[in-house]
Amino acid sequence: QVQLVESGGDLVQPGGSLRLSCAASGSIFSIINMGWYRQAPGKERELVARIGSDNTPYYADAVKGRFTISRENAKNAVYLRMNDLKADDTAVYYCSMFVRPRSMVPPAWFWGQGTQVTVSS
Image (cartoon, rainbow, N blue to C red; front, side):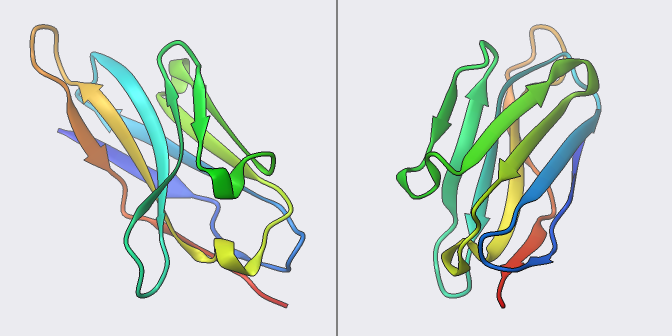
């Protein structure tokens, strides 16, 4: 199995910054895609950013220009740098990875447990 552990969530004032981290462990042959999702109270989970194995990033319109996703393959890790945070960014942030556990085994999505980001003065 594959386990994902996020860290870095916190309470921050509007305009502040945070860096989320997520590391995968367990049976990992390759990680194809990595991404960050978020879910605010009363809302559906939404994609925030993702990054492919070629390091091509994708961002939701709401975070373009403020958030940066990056990956560190040697550590099976993905990061989300969040700048100029707004109240609307308040949510539980989830890390997700599309992982091939072993050679010749189909890849599957795995999820972390989530980390709370609260933007408030």
